[in-house]
Image 1 (cartoon, rainbow, N blue to C red):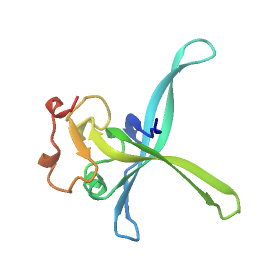
Image 2: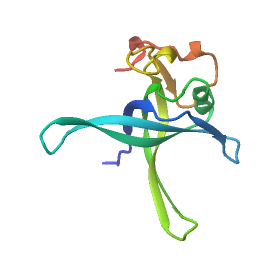
Image 3: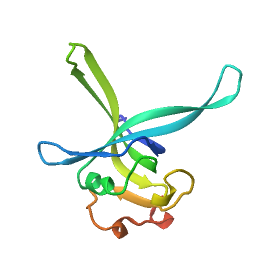
Image 4: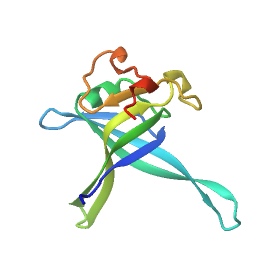
Length: 145
């Protein structure tokens, strides 16, 4: 059996996305995503526990998303985990795990950034072109399962 590296997250952006370019010219978009979980405290009461993830999106998809995402937007991310390590300036070893997005779905409309509604079912597949918004409109009928 082969290994599986897949993650699906739904949450809100913790900051405005940062679009950069690699030396090769490939665009990379850095996102911060907060995902709330629930757990019981010592008294047995349910409390929200936030989890924070760094997410990277590459290529034309990064360019398109940079124009549509902002802090507070609710999104769904499907991707894989990527571990990296480096040596810090103080000589210590550092490492982190990030999510490399393969697809991003908008779960609210631009006007719903502060909360609630499940606005559009906009699906942005990996390698998508930076075309018009109409290129990325979807419906439940478009889901392959």
